[in-house]
Length: 221
Image (cartoon, rainbow, N blue to C red; front, side, top):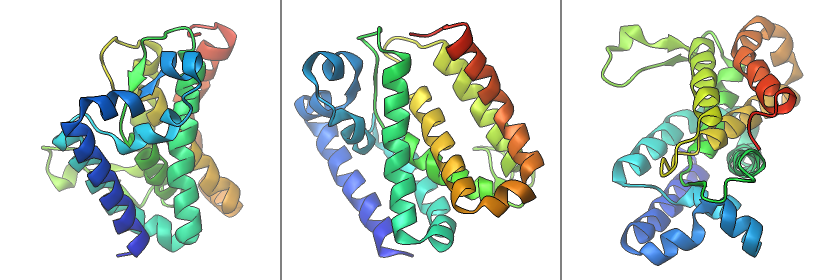
């Protein structure tokens, strides 16, 4: 197991536990549209990735990162892994800021944007080989990576287009992070795009719908 992966997990866990016990720190560093736009607190674009709602939220994100981190490290190296992880957090939150720029109440926390980037970098490499299990279902019902990707994007797009106050789950950040990981993998290893074009095309269908809703119909903004 790579040292850098364990360091990222350890730092995230420590900061999350501090946030659990200190509401002031939690509120100061979570993603919040109003605080970023009114006060210029852009640190929240990154710091929100180190905060979690509760222990289960933290454990789930770190377990998934622990599971999917090694193949990404093997394929892209330490620098590539860090670019994907933190780039996905930043892009996911920037995407959220763009989408909800007029909804000053909108808040979110969690490393899920970065974790999504790591997952989809893996899926881009092995869309039909990677099997992703669903909690409480037997392993034999695991989904191929590209099917999971399609469902993940579809769910994230739906929730992103229908935000709920006090939800605190960054669906747009998940989507932006996953997109960053996918695009980074394809841009870095272009042969992946050629060999997996059909699978990537299936995963991209919800993104096309999202683009129509956001940029043509201006549904959010």
